[in-house]
Image (tube, rainbow, N blue to C red; front, side, top):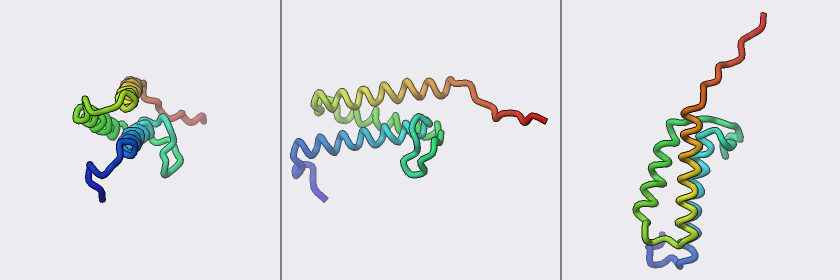
Amino acid sequence: MKTETEYSPEKAKILFSSLVLSLGTQAMAALGKITHPVTGKIEKDLDQVGPTIEMIEMLEMKTRGNLSREEELLITQTLSNLKLNYVEEINAPTQEPPKEVK
């Protein structure tokens, strides 16, 4: 495993972007907005979304002042998108299963 100083700036940028995109994809799958990458099904798990958003917020806070403009935009837009979708989902009316016609 490499230490921080052994990564080139380009490699670090790629790793950072991959981490943010991975967390964002995980949260979008938990919101039921995209198919789950493993099962290929739409699965909602709203309890998982809040902690994932918090992790990205922590990452943003800890890296503040050390990111390129592109990295700042990526993390800010990812957070905004996730928060908007999360609020939309928690405020959405719950759907009841269709009633059987007899």
